[in-house]
Image 1 (cartoon, rainbow, N blue to C red):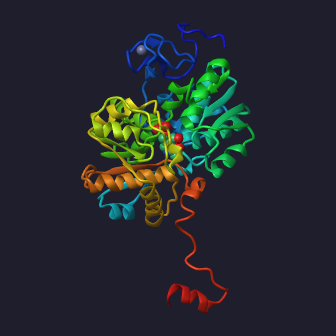
Image 2: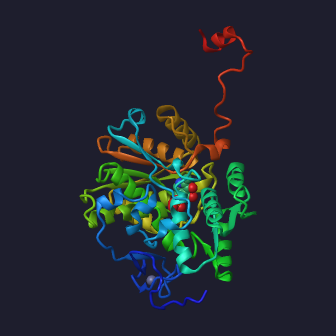
Image 3: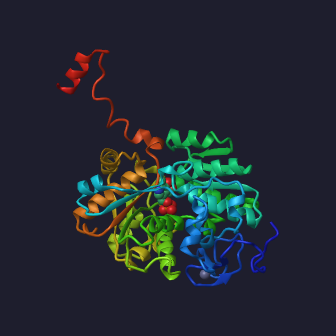
Length: 418
Ligand SMILES: Cc1ncc(COP(=O)(O)O)c(C=O)c1O
Ligand SMILES: [Zn+2]
């Protein structure tokens, strides 16, 4: 790669105008960089937005690209092969609301994305930016869903991919990545080991775009589209409360950024909203820091069935704490038993089958209502970010047929107690 830090902005990334350090505010021109040269803080995309109108968005593509005027992508982004994620359902969840004791509840059902998780959003933006920045290979370290999304997006774009996963990942997540036929490497170690390895490899291979490492500033912006869609689907207004699962924490901070931008651009009225974070107790470093009143997040060694959220050293942890405290939200964590119960509760009340991360969100929402932290009268949105078919092993010992019977009506009646 010929780009050097400090070179003039020559990349067409739409409204994105610079990279700005989240710690010291130092700005550099758009570049394939992710850490501040002054203080090593993480870089974030800064924009100069043109006029963005609701009508133009509504007339746009039926994917995240309807928000291209708010993302670090070129204006012709939709003409390049990509997975076109987004515009997933916002489902009114009255039966779940009744079960949880909430008056008004919605589920943002991101299982409807091309590889069945919200990760298609961030990868689509990362690929579009990586193309502009001159990368040739799409890569990532992943807890599972990102592996699916990266391998699929690369396949569709005709790029090579290098995907690194912990070897202990769920079989379904391994197969649903391997099928795209990129280079899938299972690493003997946990996600935090895999992430360190990816950082090392990114430094060695200048044309590999590790979506969540060296392209992270662009990648993370993809999660803003969840906020944009929720607001548009509510009729261009913000919800009062939103519950978001936390792994690295990027998604939670970008949902907040998305809501703020909509208010600043007068696309919605800037009404107050509260952001709540959800973790599994077996990997709850951000929840622990929140409860202890700390500003820094102490890394942990994950041990939970919610493997997609099993990041022990979350890169965005301190920024999650900032968002949750600024918006008067809270962070809570739930046991693996509660995660399974959360999966089953969503399934039996709303007919939506989520993976363990969604179980974490539902179970956390339940706990937040019970402890009086979620306001039962405020309009609430739960982010259901991944599909249950990928984590069948989490529930296989808990559910199954009520009975196995011979093909006779009498046997069915007997099994039903009729
Ligand atoms: C299904 C699902 N939900 C939520 C998350 C959390 O994402 P983040 O790392 O942005 O906090 C992940 C991360 O892998 C995930 O797979
Ligand atoms: Zn800095």
